[in-house]
Length: 154
Image (cartoon, rainbow, N blue to C red):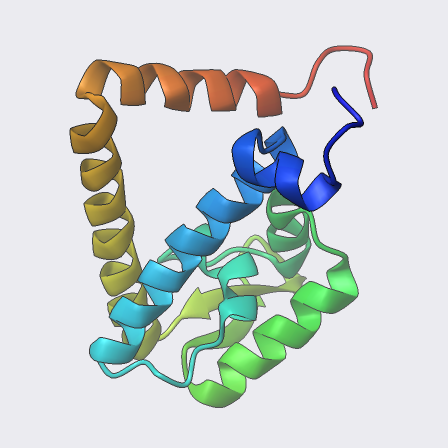
């Protein structure tokens, strides 16, 4: 890394991993939420994107949403509260453990998930077209490998 240029200039001509990941994430989220707005789900906010990808049709516990999303349980709880108020999810007793609650998408929530899934698939197809399908598949595999927990670490 050279120190002859200002950070802002360096990040423009040679962005680091954090900047690249942030840009890709922001571009993806912007596209997903634009699609959601266009399909009548304009009440969803980008912050809801922390849990929406992990919702299962048959429900998931909030603690599992927190683990999968990497967010604190309290943050996930607030997001689920908001999604419940907006009509996208409901909480029901877990049949496997009546003390626990499942977060289950409502029909409105399932429709929003279908819209988001289509937007993600469209974005992935655009990226694959831009850099080539093989390069895109290798990129995804490399990302998974970098994010995979390593034995004995952390």
